[in-house]
Image (cartoon, rainbow, N blue to C red; front, side, top):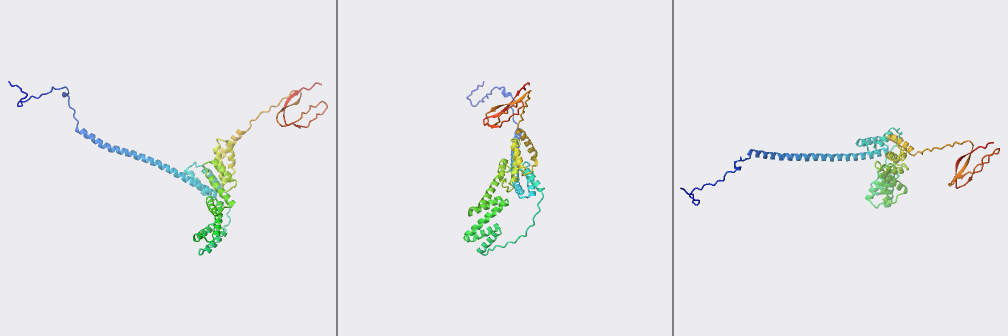
Amino acid sequence: MNLYDPNDLTQKHPVHREPPSVGDTQPVKTVSAGRGRTMSRLWFLGIPGLIFVVLAIATVSGYMSGLSMREVAEAETASSAAQQQMDQGIEDYLAGNFELAVQRFEYVLSLDPNYPGAAELLGEALTALNRPTPTASPIASLTPTPTPDFTSHEGMFSSAQDAFSRGDWTTTLDILIRLRGENPDYRLEEVNRMMASSLRNRGMDNFYASRLEQGIYDLTLAERFGPLDSQAVSWMNSAAFFIYANSYFGLDWSLATEYFGQICQANIWGACTKYGLSAKAYASELAEEDYCLSMYYFSEAFVYVAPGGAEPTATEVAILCATATAPTPTLTATPTLGIGTATATLETTPTSTLTPSPTPSPTEGTPADTSTPTSTPTSTPTTTETSTPIPTP
């Protein structure tokens, strides 16, 4: 009988085995190697696709943003061009270049059909084009001007005097500036007086030609040589005020109307035309707020500019103003007297008016005596009709 000795290493030891459990009887799940490789491919393909989508979204967003910025820039450019053409059109209109003014105003309306004042000015320019053109007077032949002498300082000064005597202020200034550059001390006081007079006179000529900014510039330079005369100061102030008033034209019709109305009293630089246009636009703004004030400014505007399309509105506000301010009629009752002779009984109220003395009733066979009115500064008569029966004979 073989005995099993656990300490005997020469013997084979039996393997201890655990009894099988229920879990050992279930099938073991295995992961397919092919499926893992498919998932890896999907990940590698999905990442570039995701990057492409992100880039596409960013590209579209950038394009839309750029398109929006481009539209804003185009709108700003169009607005600037419209403002520039509007200003130049007004200058052409005031200078009598009506055909060019029409082209400019039409271009402004093509950019912005609702541009303030463009339609009205276009109508005015078209109306002016239909007026008969005055016959031009014959042009006198031009007298050639002598060439300035630049060989010496005395010759330059004499040439400046010649230019000054014929009213060529720009040539005078050019010669004197060159002389001053070569010899600043040459006949200093005379050169200063001639330069001041030339600048003053050229500035006044610019004012007469409606070149207001140039005129103000010349007079400002002339003022450096000494005080200006009162006429030059008055014109320079008027030009500055005109430019100030013009800054409100098309922006604030009430202020433009007020300021151009003041300049229109002098009737210079087309101020009355601008006053009429401003008053018409301001009256249109007031048409829904103040009928009577709107009617007033329409009447003021039509003195200087054509009604154009504002005539129906002007008629409407005139009717509304007349209706709103018409006095309410009061009915006056006519007293019906009974049989008898009416006599007047006076009742006084405490106001200072003329009070006639009562006229006595006529008696039978005797003419009635009429009293002379007396002034009583304390009462006003109020007549109350009373009926006196006729006595039976």
